[in-house]
Image (cartoon, rainbow, N blue to C red):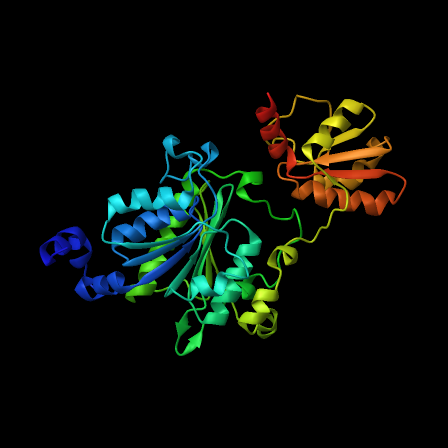
Amino acid sequence: MNNDQLYERYQRQLILKGFGAEAQQKLLSASVLVIGAGGLGCPLLQYLVAAGVGSIGIVDDDVVALSNLHRQVLYNVQMIGRPKVDCAVEVLKQLNPQVRFTVYNERLTNKNAVSILSAFDIIVDGSDNFATRYLVNDACVLLNKPLVYGAISQYEGQLAVFNVLLNHERSTNYRDLFPHPPKEGEVLNCAEAGVLGVLPGIIGSMMANETIKLITGTGTLLANRLLTYNTLNNQTYELEITAIADTRLLIPATEAVLQQTDYEMLCSSTTVMNEINTTQFNSMIADGSVAIVDVREKDELPVITAFSHLQIPLNSLQQHTAWLTEDTIVLFCLSGKRSAAAAKQLNELFGTSKKIYSLKGGIQQWMQQQKQTV
């Protein structure tokens, strides 16, 4: 691209007071890793690419699904079933062919995190699970990488900038805000709780803004602060984050220790010995003498009418154990997480007097299996 084309593409940024050619050159020279090409990743990637970030990496092991399209605006129905990273780059290259892309069609793990993150100046986390969030945070602290963080659920989102160098010291990190992962079922992801489609567009755009500010040195960063935004009333509020000395001890001190840390296990407080698969679940439905219990909230979708069952939300399960008169109890939720937590509760209450099972993969996986066998 010659200078005339460069000026024409970025002209609206170049004429900004306090921005100009110097800030644009910083963008063109920067490298950013975006973790997750989903709801947050889509708008985030679009605006980073449009702004002229020179090198962008994308990590995601998922494929495009129909349920993604109400919020993941990079994709369309022709892309369903294809890897998100491939589809994202295909679209983004049409927006700005000068950007260099590196794609990782794989899950970020404790084994590959350091090697992947090391190649980029700034890390932006748009992931949707706690295991990845804690892994990314710890790796960024270990590698002295600034981290732009965002998260969404239902009608509310939040974002912050972590581990950035301010006055020769690193700002707070994610563990200063949340030292330990929540217990199983305490915080639902978007697949379980739902999300308004425009929310990731708003939070993802704000994450892109923080990333651009971080690269160019413009404005005031959301460092040592957490911004929360609610779509229902357009209210925002900020929480000041203070560094906690003890949380630093929770972060692996070396790459070797990080690679030995099982983040999936740390973020799963429940181990279910008696999980059943969809085939076993169908057999128990047919048995007729088994208590089938939906532990989701009463207004959650999809509504299940294919078989008889009780509905007892997880948070009120212990108050309704008198309903569970059968010797065998099978619990389900959308993904299997809350039913696993419910199974642990009931096992502690009933001991060996009843057989307690949780549907692995949840009712969502069961429905997919049913479609495949029709």
